[in-house]
Image (cartoon, rainbow, N blue to C red; front, side, top):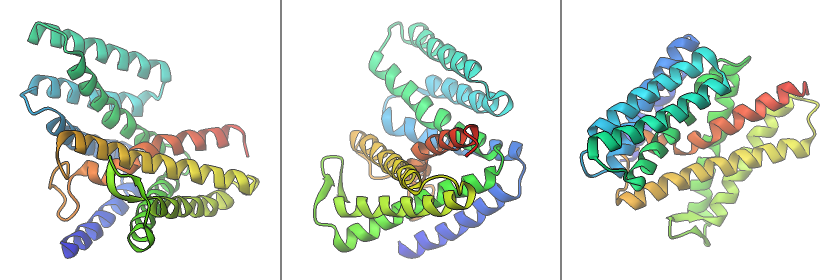
Length: 268
C-alpha cells in the first residue's frame, strides 16, 4: 500500500511538472477538462445509486463547455449567464425525462457541476495569468504542505478530534500544523513576489489558504460519509480517486486566484 502510494505520487508529480511547465495554456485547459470529467463521474457515482445517466451526460457536456468558455473569454457576465442557463436546462430535462421536479436530486446534480467544473475552471484561469505557472505551483505546494503536515503532526501529536462526526481521524493539532505549513509557504512566496506586502497580510493570506484547503478536504469527507464510501474510486493506486487527491485543491484554487487578482490590481 505504502509502496503504491509512493510510486503513484512520483508518477503524478512528474506528470504535473510536464503538464504545468511544458504544455501550452490551451493544452492545459484540455487536461483540466479530462480531470474534471473523471472527477464528475466519481462524484455522480458516489451520490446517485439510481441510473441518472442522461443527467450526468448533459452536465458533463455543460461542464466541458463552461471550462472552454472560461478559457476563451474569462468574462464574469458570460460565465454567470452560462451557469444560470445550465441550471434552467437541468430543471427542464428533469421535467421532460422524469415528469417531475425532484429538488433534492437537482441540488445534488448541480452542486456537482459547481463543485467540479466551476471550481476547476479557476486552475485554467490561474495558468493563463502572468506568472501563472509559478502561481499554480504556489497553490499546489501550499495545499500539499498543509495536507502533509496536518497528517504527520496529527499522527504524532494529535489528541483532540477536530470534527469526529465528519472525519474521525483529523485532529486539532494536525489542523494547526497544516495551517502553519500554508502560512510558511505563503510568506516565502509573497515576500519574493510582493515584497511591499506587510508580514501580517502574508500570514493572513496563508491562513485563508490553509482554512480553504482544509474545508475542501472536509467537504469531500461529508460527501463520502453521505454516500457510505471510503474513496471516490480506485483510479490512483494507493490514493483512491481523483477527487480524493483534489479535494483540498478545489477550494484553494479560486481563493488564491482572487487573492492574486486583488494584489495585482492594487499594484502592491
